[in-house]
Image 1 (cartoon, rainbow, N blue to C red):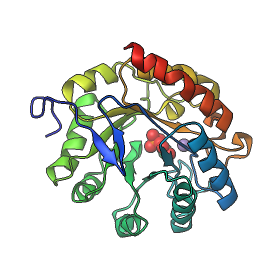
Image 2 (image 1 turned 60 degrees about the vertical axis):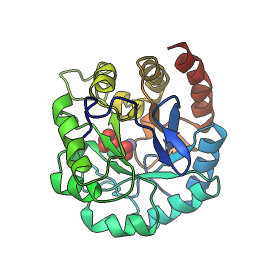
Image 3 (image 1 turned 180 degrees about the vertical axis):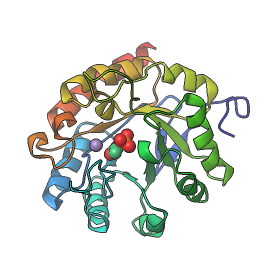
Length: 264
Ligand code: PEP
Ligand code: MN
């Protein structure tokens, strides 16, 4: 279902009137984690003022250590929803557990994110496949392109065809940055699938200063959008502080992207 052989034209997914895919270039901004109402209010303001039309924020966090901040859970969903609503921004947030699906629907989460660690959690994929909600499917950190396409197929097989692929970097021998942004995946996926392809340069590089270069490379390579971590005060972020852009940095970056998108 996700293959271009099956559907030749680029698919455009509409999220509350915001098109993802086709000619549009969308930037989803926002913090790694929802922390406080004030942090979210300022984050949403920064996202909207940068020109982003969707907002991200993690309420359920897949942390490596069980002793670090795990996310605010349902309280976090509420803060994300309220902050984003003030600027009419649709929300994107990660689902880790099928038992939270009803809660996600109750908060009208606009785009369900499946994280790198769950790309092959087939039961989770089957459940979101039964929903009528767009899904961002992040690439597993060691997944091949064909495994990633098949993971999307699990979602599509249930009837939900609104899938957005998100390249977020893969694991290699390199340790100088958090992950290796596989730019090659973009033209390959754009050829293999009719669905939108976005890039998360924040989790790829792992450092804020790398984000603009990776973001611009993604757009030049044909990405349909970007998922970027931003925070009103990155130094104080409870999670992924090193890679968050300030609101000013986010705006500065977004302002440079249209020129690149138009040039290709
Ligand atoms: C995230 O986007 O918050 C996240 C945890 O990303 P990933 O699943 O790519 O590590
Ligand atoms: Mn993060």
